[in-house]
Length: 307
Image (cartoon, rainbow, N blue to C red; front, side, top):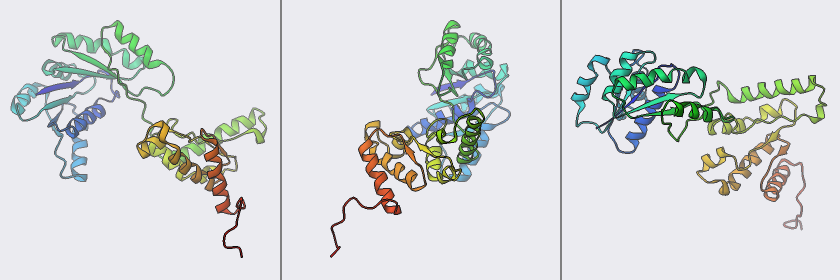
């Protein structure tokens, strides 16, 4: 039985999200996983309750709540019954953190690459010392898609002797309505360009597939591209070989032509006017075909059935 505790003195670092994600991945890998929720907010327990309502057959991972003082007793009770245990701890609770660290084989310290999170790491380091210097690993979470803040965070953590997991978690974009957000954003920027003296015929808007968006977002923006073309500004599509195409079809970057052409055709049908392309000839042919289907372009050659 292997026990992993997730500890951070700063709230909002993603402890619970990482806990349930790791436990679910362990279950998918064939391990019997258990989450022990020490947080009075019971976020992991609530997640389990919702999951059971949607998927009654899902019993792995199991989630139970416990008090820090009863943690050792809980572990003894499940000894031999589970393969791996994840302990989710509350922020700003040294008692819970110390209790979890003492029984853990490994401590994971989620933190975002920002000063507010990093400033609390020395406190967590002291807790680890009190627990007997258990093996620990920092996990950088919510890493921006640009900039080098995560590299600066790694340097800071190295200075205080906290190893850093080589895998980082990127910032997960969340939108109430991704397409509405894109429309509002491009209209704002187009307005700023006009106010700055840019000629209207030099302004193009771009929904920015995959930038700050996951695959679901990029698919939705493509599906609702007509909302951007309806603004009256010419729309640029930069979807060629994008990751959302690869993730949707499960293919690598060199095998995304078919998916790219499908997205391009949808965009053209919905009114996009400019297309950034890697495969220029194939893209040109796809656009010509869409234009002909719409009745905007005659066929290049017609010889069949004309007699």
